[in-house]
Image 1: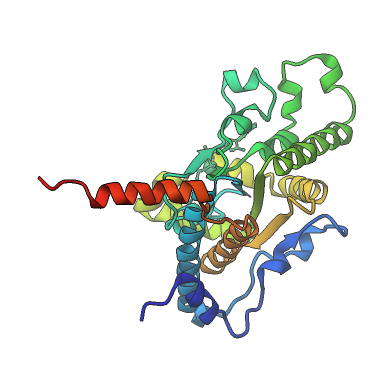
Image 2: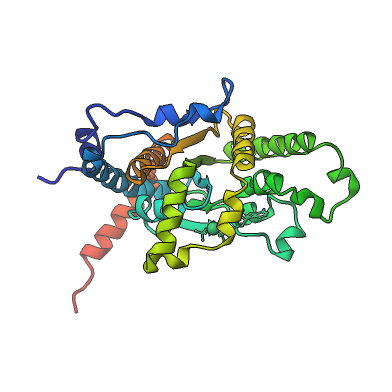
Length: 310
Ligand code: ATP
Ligand code: MG
């Protein structure tokens, strides 16, 4: 007998998971310190195959839930991935979302803003890329860059905006942005969207290993750019920016998940758990038909059955 994805996911639930999804969730209800969240779950390597199977089971479950979400059409889902370079954003999208139907799912990468984008407010390109309700959008990076890289590199100084929007100390400027983001995310929630915000938390040593692999292995050369080292040099400033941003933009409806990313296979499982959770929270249902619609359907059936054969 073929097991349904749901049964399989329950059946395979690990016996002694070191770290669970709840341990990675920060909803703003207490104080936040990034150092309380490890970069490695230190999961037993012998269990890699088991977790890979669990991730696959979650992927199958996602496909079922996505179909319902699409048919239902009441909620839209935005999955945001933030991380330092080489933390695995791209491969997480590739592996975890592999079961999702491309119809009903989009991926948008937030690169250095174009001239046109810079001529708009910073939420403009995010709003332009929101999914319609019933669909999923994956943001590879997001408007959070506007409180991360913009803070670390003081890009505010390069903005072409009125003085009143730019003056004041750094903290006040970014507190204003955190508030704008919280309000925007509340607005989305109140308009039928759910957000999943993931920070893939990689350690400095693991990043070095992955960069070296990108340099040493010809098939990975294309993934490396010298600029990545300039970002790495700003590691403490980035961690500080992440800490403040997560502390100030986590809310009940839009918490952050700080995922230990040093073990890719374990991080993928955690992200797959988070995606399943957000889809389950939507509680999607196949639409049911009214009496009249059922009667109309029955009439169509009758018509089809009695269709003259050629
Ligand atoms: P990969 O390296 O795997 O292709 P990536 O997401 O690192 O993926 P890149 O093209 O290397 O893609 O980097 C995108 C860059 O754009 C990042 O350095 C990011 O900080 C920057 N960026 C994104 N949004 C903004 C923004 N609003 N302002 C300034 N820089 C931004
Ligand atoms: Mg990059």
